[in-house]
Amino acid sequence: MRRVVITGMGIYSCLGKNLDEVRQSLYAGKSGIGIDPMRKEYGYRSPLTGIVERPALKGLLDRRSRVCLAEEGEYAYMATAEALRNAGIDMDYLEKNEVGVLFGNDSSAKAVIEAHTTAMQYKDTQMMGSGAIFQSMNSTVTMNLSTIFKLRGINMTISAACASGSHAIGLGLMFIRNGLQDMIICGGAQETHYLSMGSFDGIGAFSIRVDDPTKASRPFDRDRDGLVPGGGAAAVILEDYDHAVKRGAHIIAEVAGYGFSSNGANISQPSDMGSAIAMERALKDAGVAAKDIDYINAHATSTLQGDAFEAMALDHLFTPYHTPISSTKSMTGHECWMAGASEIVYSNLMMLNNFIAPNLNFENPDEYSKNLNIVPHTIEKEINTYLSNSFGFGGTNSALVIKKIK
Amino acid sequence: MQREEVIKTVNHFLVEEIEIEEGLLTEGALLKEDLGIDSLDFVDIVVIVEKNFGFKIKPEEMKDVKTLGQFYDYITQKVN
Image 1: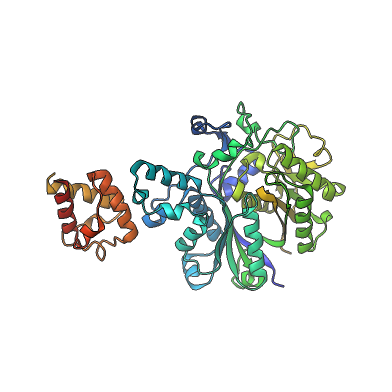
Image 2: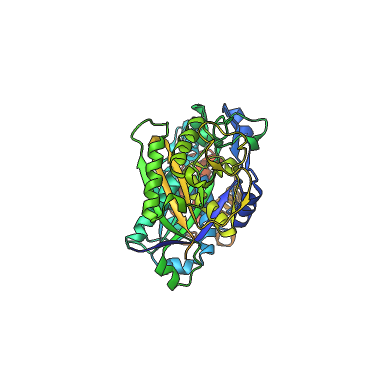
């Protein structure tokens, strides 16, 4: 069976616009959460969000490419360009070799709403312009990246709610492990515009702790009152180990295991059993035991139910080993479709630099988190193997085990 | 509206919004072959013309419009 490694990564999020900025924010425990005034005007219950600046792409991309990119596609372009540079891959390589792309994305609402608004105004669909269709489709990210980077391998978008980015990496692992591809760009992207998250706010899922935005996202804390949405994009270059060695690539880590499950139950309520099954499968796939895990990047989004169910599952599997746990969503908010990919990049940065980023605002445990070793402040720690969890609406669960290459 | 004014407006949006090099904008330039305007770009030009000149381009009226000069003439005729 072929081994699969990460040879490049890129990130564009509320913690920074590149790997170096994000590494610094993670180490400093710096929150990227703030207030979006437009959300108040639009009728949101909560104006809190991860603050992500739109990249200036004029001069980097031609007009046609820019016109077809939705907001999340712009972020995905920035993250992918950094990941390819990080992996030592240029356009000449992409033109001569078959490289695939698998990204997690589950909406492009802003583009859809804007096209609808234009049609209503002019009573003429042509006034939507040429980019609307390419921005509106769920596969907008991969259709644009494959065009911009001239990709000729597997090319599709994974839509699995807030586990999309994690499943994209897991499926990339399967394609390469089975010998179908040698290299795939995997990642996740998430729009942050106020037009994109209103319906999520509408079900009361967001924190309303607006007096201090940096305190609003508080995974596992007793006084949490909901999640804060965030976004951007993350990308990793997955590659067959032998292929990477042969081309002299710098190997960041090995994607050792992927586990998944579906709860088969409530549409919005998570499950301790379902998430535990995904974690156990990932451990088994990686050939490691729970005691071998040095760090867990939890899914924990700061919702009452979600964190409680994950805490129950983590307690069941890891409490005997006192495994350090943090949720980087305490700094980023919930990066939704992107989170499963961004949290691999965040955790890789920790692994490469021997630290664990804090679970901000964990001040008091509740009955479910009291037995867990949740890390409230940055600690220096060597990480050889870690687990990253992602769970989504509809009960979709994904877990990844990543190891240092030995 | 004078033809010169139409030329100024059209050239401005072709440079600023469609991002065509200004030096290519000659009366004899072929829209497709010389200026590289494809069917998707043309959708955006229809939108821009409606916003700037207040009328909707009809595809059947454009079948004999091949050069930029003919495009200026077509718009001048429609707005007067």
